[in-house]
Length: 215
Ligand SMILES: [Zn+2]
Image (cartoon, rainbow, N blue to C red; front, side):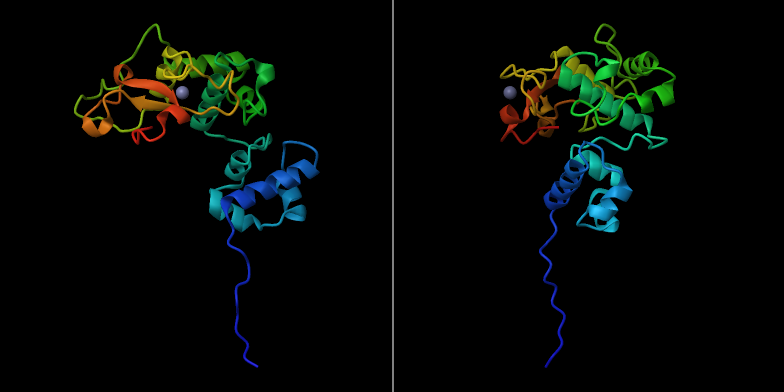
């Protein structure tokens, strides 16, 4: 008899990991999934999850579950990014009580902890994104540079100007759950189109399909 190792495990897909995270969270009766609970009931090891998604929290968020509320020192960028997503989902400024799944990955706690209050967090966010009334030039630093991807501030400005709706079909995530909004270059980036307010518009994933110049 010849002993030969055969790896009989099916290939682990990201979707199968996410499905298992959701399964355990559902078993626990909610949208939160503490790491130690998953260790007891989950199908995959922590290292597999971490290797695939970069961190436990990133995996949890990718699964559409709430981020660990006790997590400390969440980078500002991540807080703002989440707030922007929530804002886009609602099509307006989120209320404190709305901060949580499915609108937001984080509750209001990390914002209050970081900025002192929910309103202060909103003020800080609006400060970095700028308002539509006072457009700030993204390319003030130098016209020569034309980044392909818009900064968080610019993305928000474009979507705010377009009222968080697809400029082609008029749908918005606020009225169509799960709709994903993208930015689109009017003059394509590949044809020298600039990544700036005037040359960007908001489109949904459907309308953007096949264009190949989505951001
Ligand atoms: Zn559309």
